[in-house]
Image 1 (tube, rainbow, N blue to C red):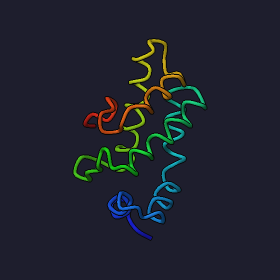
Image 2 (image 1 turned 90 degrees about the vertical axis):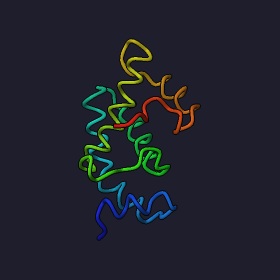
Image 3 (image 1 turned 135 degrees about the horizontal axis):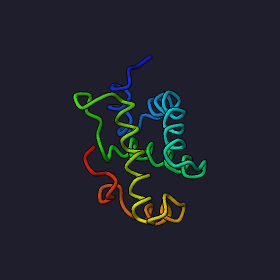
Image 4 (image 1 turned 90 degrees about the horizontal axis):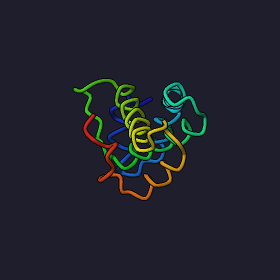
Length: 114
């Protein structure tokens, strides 16, 4: 079994097994965090998907010197939720996610340094 840092190094290169192992380890925790923060199952589902898309694209590379893998993943999720809440003014809503997906990951405001 590989460590999380090793898996995160292999994922951007297209290693499907590495991604699946990493996803299985962390999907539940990311989903629960997003659900607790947003209070909405549909938002938690979308946030979870978006967090792992960031991981695949390595849009915000993980740096073990800055914190744990969970902190890295929760930070990405938090940024998505807070950006959406600020954008709508009424808390996160699904139309915000549709608009956000039109943006590229590298120019996405929620991908600011964590």
